[in-house]
Image (cartoon, rainbow, N blue to C red; front, side, top):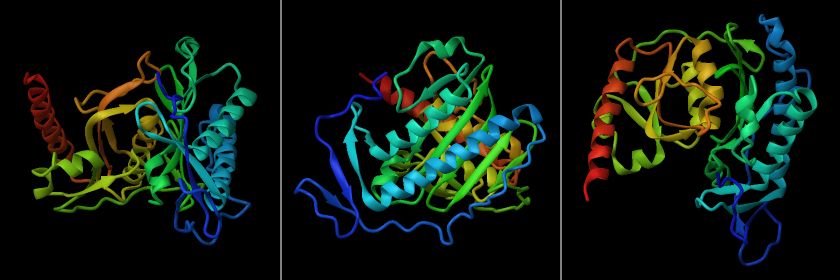
Length: 321
């Protein structure tokens, strides 16, 4: 896996008024949620008492990581390019460090899988594994689009049992423990059923740009998603009716979102309609179809049909010599 390979040079993202060299890009000030999160944020009540320590520890660490994100965004951070040409920042690495230290300190027997850490095959022998995307939506972070987030899930025998997604910009922390429902900033939320003849669907940015979902857009409001983890949290909360892509996604992109959606009463699968099983030797799936519990009963089948047609066209295009 080539997560850590980077080019020798890096770009510095500066705060207003900070001087840098000619290679540096100057970015506009970032605007976080106001007022700031209270220091006495109540933790979600965990009915699944055997996982209470895991949830409490995760919430404390992800909030600490969120604070670090705020600090780095305000003072400026470096951007590097990995071998796959995707960006990685000092923000990604700092969040990864904070969360990895949590796992090593509090749960040393668990495995670890993160986008920003070398993959250790020892995780495949672990009953429990922490799957982490330190910043999902790094491009959004660099471009000041307020949709990037921190995504963490604890996996037990292939299934998410604890999950948290934090958007540092909106100051929203979504959490879930298997069998105990969905929480937002420590308060249980139950999305209210709605019916929309033109449901809002978040789709992969590249697929949106090339018009892959143009037919779907005739009956739905398709919008590009800059972070799939953030999109899945919105689907879980019922603010968005669905999320759709047939492009490859890694386990760290979707692990936390899978539990959030399941605990909210929604449905989620890969593009073929198969359930996700995590901690695989190759931690990658093809596509995601996520539907909110509040959506129309026919939306799931509709998105599945569009995914199958798009997948067939893609396969045929790749088969052309």
